[in-house]
Length: 220
Image (tube, rainbow, N blue to C red; front, side, top):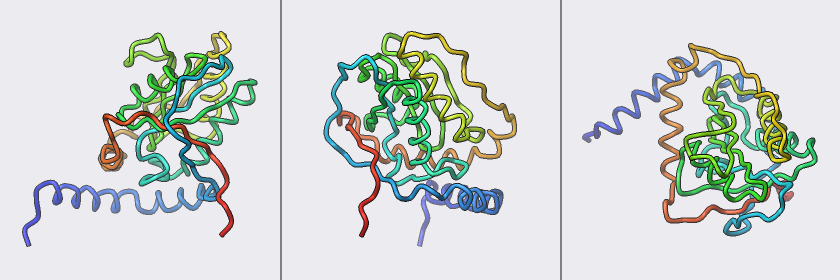
């Protein structure tokens, strides 16, 4: 049976990931595998908010569906809960939407900001890349950008929520401090590419963003 170049490349990349990261990813998954009691429920098409005390969290197309952990194995529901907690600590209301027309973090964040009553939104990809955006900025501009998914922690995600809420209140907070790891890009590049390929499969360019609710799973 013949194998296409694309399938062969994917197979090779998969082997590289398993050989380089199998032990580490396994241990990290065990460490963070704590939030399987929560799920995202679709409510309907997302509408622009009218409340100025809200921040919209825009998640990528495959977030919590095909992909359930960040690039380092953090449960994506735990990530959402931390961001929401950070927003709520500042007295602001979080709202979640799934952006379906793009898998690009900047455009996800900009779409979230346009739907937000405060004009401030957060863009979040499954792998952990994030951005704080504002409605009146250009899509490729931002308030704060977090491009290195491998160094993101739950504490950082909570701080992102807090800062986004502060921007929504008209404050000018200090940017969230993050670690810099120059080796993270080559180390996780293959895995990042595979995750992006999965995200793109769920893109529906003509479909509007969907309002979501984070809730506990019903007991079976």
